[in-house]
Length: 166
Image (cartoon, rainbow, N blue to C red; front, side, top):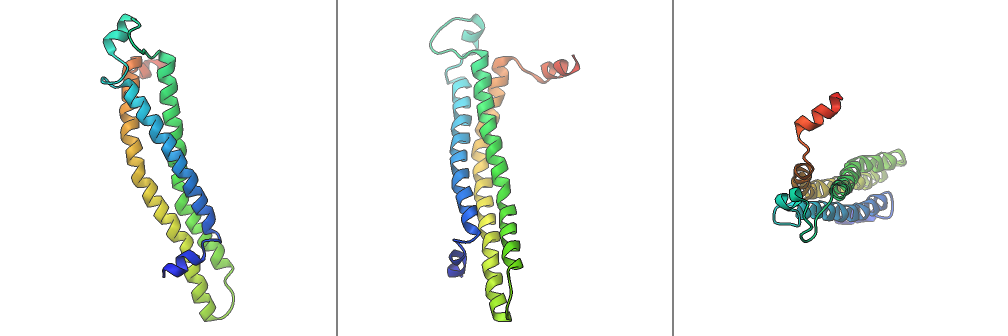
């Protein structure tokens, strides 16, 4: 069985593998940005609510546009990561369909071709599961970081609603 899985590697499966490597890099960037956002804005990090209100320059102080830039960067990488991760099952199915369309010949060849066609689905599902599992690592830090950023900037649901009405 493992032989069949790796036999089709140089076919359509290589596209899935290359995208998985690229998404690993996007994961690293998303996780790093989310962690930096949280670390820089958390109460034990560089931002202190009382220092910011007094506008004193004690240590490193983040300005509003720096906070917004950190938040936007983290959200951008996270969005890329989630969207690329969602493509893996689709690529797996596409690889299977392409292989099935090319099946011709007797029953023995068709059985072997069908097994090879399923390898794309296998890799698509494996990477989808792995990247979905890793997504929780980013989500936790990003949610906490965005909450801290909104607190730092004074953004609340009431503020957002009044801005939408205006």
